[in-house]
Image 1 (cartoon, one colour):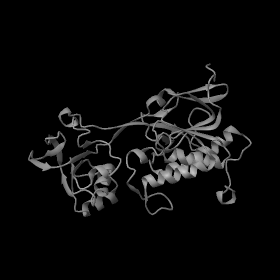
Image 2 (cartoon, rainbow, N blue to C red; image 1 turned 90 degrees about the horizontal axis):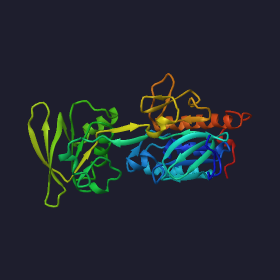
Image 3 (tube, rainbow, N blue to C red; image 1 turned 180 degrees about the vertical axis):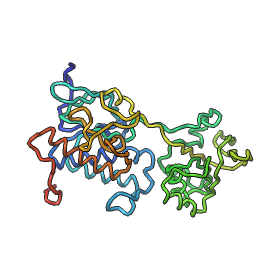
Image 4 (cartoon, rainbow, N blue to C red; image 1 turned 90 degrees about the vertical axis):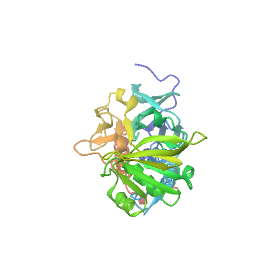
Length: 338
């Protein structure tokens, strides 16, 4: 078995993923007196919140009637930093193995030994679904967007949004009073987005065209998007729209990536199977958040669920590391945190 030559000093818990679940897991590890290290492939903490919708409001975080995603990330980092976890950002976890009685997480930059591991990698490796039409996809970076992380590029612009899921609906609402004009097209009349968001969309006055798809993009003299051709997929009727930007919200392909080769029991290419303690089939390795599939229940990919699962995983990890420890940590209101 390969040893630990050149490895960093072991920590109690390595957390793979610096999204909301991983950040809260790091805080909770500190509550349990565990020294944690957080590894994430992204150069900044926050996961999907930071990459996909930092300027969108989140409404289902307890104690916050609404909070902007980037503000939630900032507060989670501040909370986790109470116990000085080690942040290893810009490092992708590519391997997991046992050595010298420890778990070792391998990245492109080194190896990180730990007594236990919590995998909180969100939806794993993800890429936006693309239309797959080169004549349209060629405009990515020239007014065509598959991933949007901020509103600024759309100020006073004419925007076409393509899609019927949460991302499409949420960006339409987010840009409603920011862009000059918004048209949303969807290839059918049923949305995949949250019903409350869809109801708000229908009341918004946004130009919504159902049973429509995009056929062509025409550039201006500078080579950027200036016009699109859309068509009614039931009648074939075509319409030309002057636009400055096109947001293609066609969803994402999620995949476990290298995690699939770690010997974990998985559910399809999307989830790691866990029990009620958030334990995987590998002793000392836990999973929580969007990547975890608890036995016997349908996964609920909600931030609040990830918080609860992180707390559960860390408490049981504490007893794995120290069998004399209690699962119940006591109430934080009874602790002195500084």
